Length: 267
Ligand SMILES: C[S@@+](CC[C@H](N)C(=O)[O-])C[C@H]1O[C@@H](n2cnc3c(N)ncnc32)[C@H](O)[C@@H]1O
Image 1: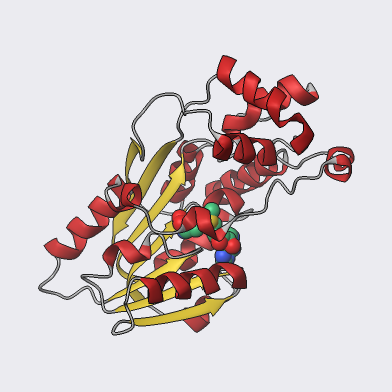
Image 2: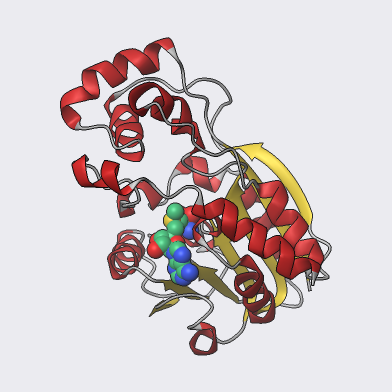
């Protein structure tokens, strides 16, 4: 019952992130559009706390054999590919065919043809029966897109034989753009839900997870380059004609690098 209440609060709070229709209509930006390039494998990803903890788990349990990883909301494979040296079989689930195509392309670029990659298009948990079970279930940067985390996490837990690893932003991934929304649109954007709420939801499901907060990149303000202006401009529905004004605003009001949280449990 408690989990039902917590998930219902999560859903209500998430719905407050909807962007007013009037702004969507006038904006030339698509704020929720994700680019596969942003989720390609990177060095920062390989040395992140999430990749480190998963690698430790794989090596500590090498005798029993960790052979399969199920990556839910795998995107372009940026997290899975970190474990390509140690794992033989990968199952990538994503609702976006564009992301799965990028995953397969990155797989080929990394010369991983000798390994087994199965991609499944569809919404988790609907496609959970198609995916079956894996030794590890991993899921990074997806939960703030999920209206019902109870169903989603229960299916993730069932799909994992040995452990589940979930990486999320500490605050909603668009939270960094809140001051921009206030300045350019006069709108107060939400501060919740947070990763702490997710931990409470997982605990309410009878699971005792470990959780650690971390920065993937060095802590501190982000450099104001074209990429940052584009990414914040997109999130805050700023038309490209106003990007110079946005750049000035970001120089005067630096954006901090996002904090992440790794939540994980053994089976
Ligand atoms: C922000 S990206 C993260 C990609 C990857 N996990 C990473 O960290 O690099 C989120 C991905 O989850 C996918 N996604 C979101 N909700 C999903 C769901 N319920 N079922 C399957 N895929 C989902 C999106 O299509 C997108 O590719």
